[in-house]
Amino acid sequence: MPDHMPIGSCFLVLLSLVCCCDGTCPNMCLCISDAVSCSSTGLTKLPQFLPTFSITLDLSHNYIFYLGAGSFEKMPRLENLCLAHNQLTNMGEGVFQNASGLRFLDLSSNKLHVVEQQYFHGLWRLEELLLYNNKITQVESGMLNGLSSLKKLYLSLNQLTDFPFFTIQDNTHPFLTMLDLSSNRFSNLPWADIKALPTLVQRGLYLHNNSLLCNCAMYSMFWHWQVRNYDTLRDFADDHRCSIHGEMRASIKFLHHTQFFRNCTLEKPVSLPVTVYLSTVLVTEEDTISLDCQTSLKSTELSYTWLTPSRGYLTPASTNNSLITIFPNGTLEIQSVKVNDSGLYVCKAFDVKLGVNATRELNVTVSLPPPESFNTGYTTLLGCAVTMILILMYLYLTPCRCSSCKQPKPPSVTAYDPSSLSSVFTSSIRENKAYSDKHVAFLEPMMSPGVTEEWTQDS
Ligand SMILES: *[C@@H]1O[C@H](CO)[C@@H](O)[C@H](O)[C@H]1NC(C)=O
Ligand SMILES: *[C@@H]1O[C@H](CO)[C@@H](O)[C@H](O)[C@H]1NC(C)=O
Ligand SMILES: *[C@@H]1O[C@H](CO)[C@@H](O)[C@H](O)[C@H]1NC(C)=O
Ligand SMILES: *[C@@H]1O[C@H](CO)[C@@H](O)[C@H](O)[C@H]1NC(C)=O
Ligand SMILES: *[C@@H]1O[C@H](CO)[C@@H](O)[C@H](O)[C@H]1NC(C)=O
Ligand SMILES: *[C@@H]1O[C@H](CO)[C@@H](O)[C@H](O)[C@H]1NC(C)=O
Ligand SMILES: *[C@@H]1O[C@H](CO)[C@@H](O)[C@H](O)[C@H]1NC(C)=O
Ligand SMILES: *[C@@H]1O[C@H](CO)[C@@H](O)[C@H](O)[C@H]1NC(C)=O
Image (cartoon, rainbow, N blue to C red; front, side, top):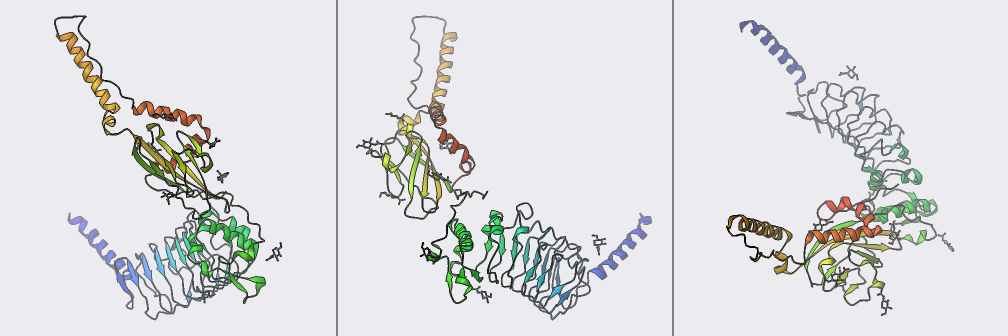
């Protein structure tokens, strides 16, 4: 034991030395466990020593105007770095080298002019990058290279006229769901590149409050997004303006005033949003069921078709039978339902003007009224087994094997047998090809409980 003492104390001395240099908290900052805050301390440059084990570093609201190469290389555990509200005009090459653990980087409200392509090299874990409210006029085309974990990129309130959309692809930025380019100076954009962006990026692309030029290519893209009801458009409908012939005074809110674009040929969406809601309906025989066809489509001029398990396709025109009605709002009403009306009902609402379909599914189970429904297959089976045992006991335990004795009757099997019923239905389903195709297509949403919504990807 005593032999180990010198080694142990040596280690302790070493440790305290390490702690002494690395653990120093710059006196203007606040250091708490793994976080350091030097916010609003009048710093003009980075403090020389910062705790090396910090995960969060807040340098916001200072006067830092430059960051050189390897500024954070002694902080390998750094994940969150806030440099908002400083005076940065540019940064040295390799400023974030050896800080590859960064996940959140806030450079908003500075004075950056150009986002150079080497600034963020190596930050493959970076998820959020905030660059809004700078003076950025140019984003170099390699800037996003290697930022493969990026989820959100904010570039709003800058002076951009151009952006390298083509560098964003499904396989390069699979998690990107927010690209904020609002309040910049875009007038014309490479619409073909934007149309080729992954659907998730298009869905989170903010372009409002720019000085766009009114033309069909521009309108066609926004029309696409509007049909899909993207939040980016809905939330900022009034801030989407474009100028006619580049004349700033003649600017229109183009999501409201669409008559200017009436001569544009708008391609019908290639693949459309399909909404599937699955709900369950339980009724007893002879009830009247009323199945509504409420989908995500809001237009009042929709046409409806119903696919039913027992009667095939139904349209309003084909239901002139008093027991079955399809109302103008799509609701299907069936009076006096039978057990064989059970199964999956699929309603398709179709908006002819927009070329959009939406689907609603309802799983209807019609059961027999209570007395009969008690006699389920399970109790019948149990009854059979008990009877069988009684017969065997009777045959083997009674001395007299009298052939004239009355055989006990097996319990009567009622008309309702769920297993045979379901097989009747599956076979009728298989006969209907369209139906079975549907069934496969919606298998996924059907398995999840409650209301599900599925968006198809652009091809
Ligand atoms: C930074 O990383 C390089 C290799 O990527 C390494 O050679 C260098 O020692 C690191 N610097 C520090 C201070 O950790
Ligand atoms: C629109 O952008 C300008 C700068 O281009 C900015 O000053 C203004 O605040 C923005 N307006 C809105 C509503 O975002
Ligand atoms: C649209 O076409 C009509 C005739 O087809 C024409 O009179 C009108 O000026 C065109 N509108 C625009 C905005 O080009
Ligand atoms: C369903 O059952 C009823 C009797 O319960 C019968 O009249 C009707 O024809 C059956 N319908 C189908 C589609 O099998
Ligand atoms: C609807 O009723 C008309 C006559 O009342 C009949 O000729 C037609 O076949 C019926 N259509 C269907 C689908 O039952
Ligand atoms: C549709 O119309 C029918 C008959 O007018 C009505 O009973 C039903 O409640 C309506 N359904 C919806 C969802 O509005
Ligand atoms: C939408 O439904 C209509 C009518 O059933 C059909 O003709 C059309 O092909 C459907 N479109 C898509 C994209 O599924
Ligand atoms: C419909 O409901 C029945 C009984 O609740 C269930 O057995 C069946 O799996 C359901 N079908 C679908 C497609 O959800």
